[in-house]
Length: 167
Image (cartoon, rainbow, N blue to C red; front, side, top):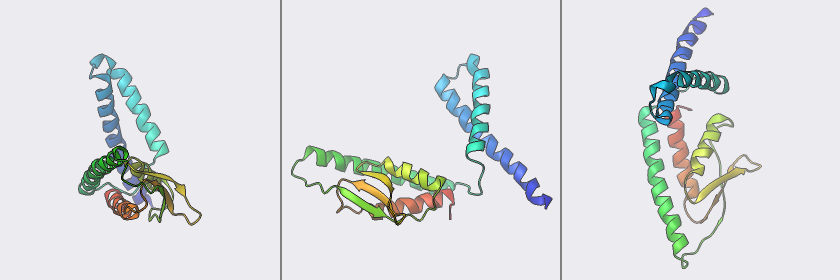
């Protein structure tokens, strides 16, 4: 019974070190790399690392770098395409808008991963997750219900699940 505990400690240390390195990198970007501010930065990093471990404990999922890159590339592409389409529709009054709601059945279970996916999808122009319906499907407000909103969300959710190894 002590084997899982022995395995958990190095994993927790590894997760804490990665998070601390990310927080330190962020601190250095924000502070302008001023060495006089480093003691305050280290205290902030320690506090942020401790808080992140309390609020988001180290789980079993480990992000896949190639899947995260694919998700990022698709997200950037979708942002540009959707942003251009929204701007085109706003500037061209002849194009008909068919605003409304699309219900998308999520595969992600309720929790942090689902919230993160909804936050990510809310950043895409032309769509806005507004909550869930009685059946648990994500309700997404979109500018044109004739567009393949559900198909796009399915692709993004699939990439998101692969990126986080949330399978």
